[in-house]
Image (cartoon, rainbow, N blue to C red; front, side):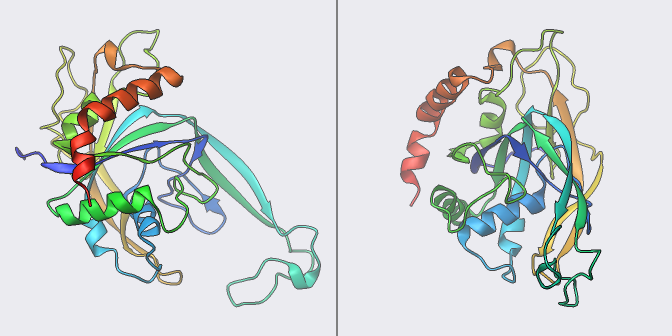
Length: 274
């Protein structure tokens, strides 16, 4: 693959907690170490105000590349629901009945990413769709979350609409401190080969990014409550060294640097959006 997408949206995903499930089922709710396509497509659908039964075929045509600014740490929550309530107020079962006496408490184990931060590029040849999604992210129909409703973002998600989005994905300031142990590679994940990622570095990459490192079942087919369906898609990974100047830490200094970058590089594209 030699061509890079010409236009796209840049998003910032940061907050106290995030959770991007890939194998969640019943009482076990896992999280991936980076945002999933199903989570991002679901977030766009919420911003657009689409019902769960509505088609998301246009949104799944968007290509997604994630930069891991801070990987965060995985937290496990021992979660209970419905305990100590009367029999007629316990958790509803799949057949519409209440859980029996003595079994009213539903126990689940849920994983979250704490203190993680990601920068994400959504690219497409459908420029009208990109503008529509940008407008929805600025003024969402329903509240947006980072994988689960209990994980709100810490600020606006949309950074801007840009030409050559992968260039900006590399150049945008990192929400991380420079490692004391020396240069560490930054991970990029995508649904497309990453060999053309515009990185300038003297240090060798861990992976070339042109060969997929596996599959992840996070491509949504349907979000219908009783007919959720996902299919596998290839996962490409590339770990590259970024210059020390890219590290802007966690403080307001990072946010000011980020805002300066947005004002400098995205102002014209933002103004052209409907």
